Length: 559
Image (cartoon, rainbow, N blue to C red; front, side):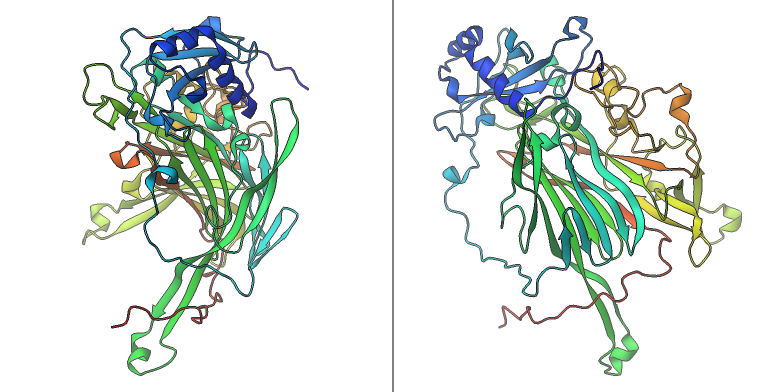
């Protein structure tokens, strides 16, 4: 092992339960809870939030978490997130296994006791609904050998690790390489508040907790529907013991509507049976689900017959709740959830995907594409728009942001491999809906996660650079030298990226303005982007995809 001074490793799964036990057993905390009328420790929900860093040098060298507290009311299955215990925050030393202090706020608001449950135990019988049955009577179109998956023209390797969870490797289409490695490298969730306790909620869910620690065992027919293949995954506990979690990753096919279609109206008028050409789309979905305290994140990597790759996050679970200060009737930085003072702060989810490209080989170049109206002299009718690509030659130049007004996207190209019109073969990164980072320069979490400041970063491959916020973000004061944006004025942050082994980092920021409809349980909110061929093929790659038999379809609802 290599000793790395002045850093803290991430929080492991067993430390969640350790923190709750230590707090429940602490005499000071027990007295303060009893003063609030809560005397049953089994109903106290204590969640360890990573301590972060806010300039307090006394915290250095201690493995700390700052806990937040909720209670269940009545039933042990009650939704405790409807009952935050405001103004009470235990600080726990995980290594010393002790409660360092319990921070008590004077004149704290009372805990709301109104119940807001979502469990089937409380909501009654589900609404009547007829099943939609998905079946593949002839079997699936993919094969699995170990962790190698083959699906039509696609071939790739499914991976898993303690920190990133699901990863994909050696992604090929028709035997041609596209990606060497794809992973969710980091995600951070800053909450909007001017109160230290809530402004300190800035969890780095990959680097501080480890998604592999928090992966779900998926349920057949609910998390994944149809003909399913599952990968079991291996995780480590806080003592380094390995255990196998069954059904940690799901692999299945889905119908995706029409892939392409054209009707020749002349042939149609002539009554030709060949007037309509259509192909049916399917996609292969690789899925993992993670529970991070109150939130759930589903990572879906979708592969399509036209060569597209779509990484997608589905965020669901429960919004993080608190109680407004006495006298307030409306939340200042969030959504009021009840007249009893319950609120949920607005926040952002910043996801960063690391993509180690190898488009037709290891050496690639990056380009930015923009669309602009031609000058008036060349544009007499006002309709002329030029689309131009500019090569990004250095790391500093390749810190880029979305510009939807110019239709901006990026390509990773192999200039040594040309298509039939003598253009480099390439794959494009097409951004999805995303916000920008709204944290001010004074924000500590912004200093620790500068990857939030740009949507696209391009760097030359470096073996130790795997994580956008660096290898050890837990309790860090700034991003480490192996993270993005670590040295804005240093030569190391401006390495050449022309015709070399490239890594593209994409930051998608889901701006969550909480609604009443997000409570007591939040319907899925999506965040995605697309990698699509851009001159990678000489023509449409899915001409021979079948229309699919209509034998399983039938007319219904006929009068």
